[in-house]
View 1 (cartoon, rainbow, N blue to C red):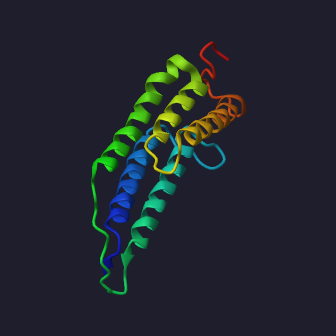
View 2: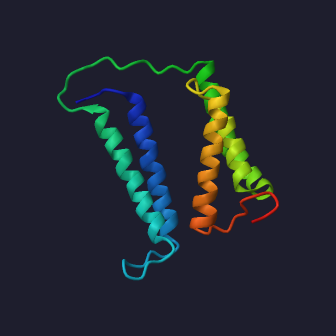
Length: 156
């Protein structure tokens, strides 16, 4: 048995850890049963899916035949650090802007900012992606699911 890709093992293990932590946190809300679900039922199901996804990623990164294949080295250059900072900053930006700017503008700004961390998106592509995803988020979460968050800075 050998590891084909260390990054997949690390990423899958992190998904498993986050899924277990989320399941433990959500189980405190009361799970209920399939006929009378509690507030923790759906988060526990999602946490279980996260754990299963992490297990699948870890298993796919391991070669059970015993063949040794050279894994690509893990690089951490300036671009990778920039991407890490931009994506983490996008989450922080989302949390700070949501109470003030509403869901549409918050999604627009944070998705466009995170798009700066992509080598595949041009600035126009990042902005177009942000507009489309922000509109989908508002329609889905505010109007279809009736999430109690303001959609626009002026309310609504």
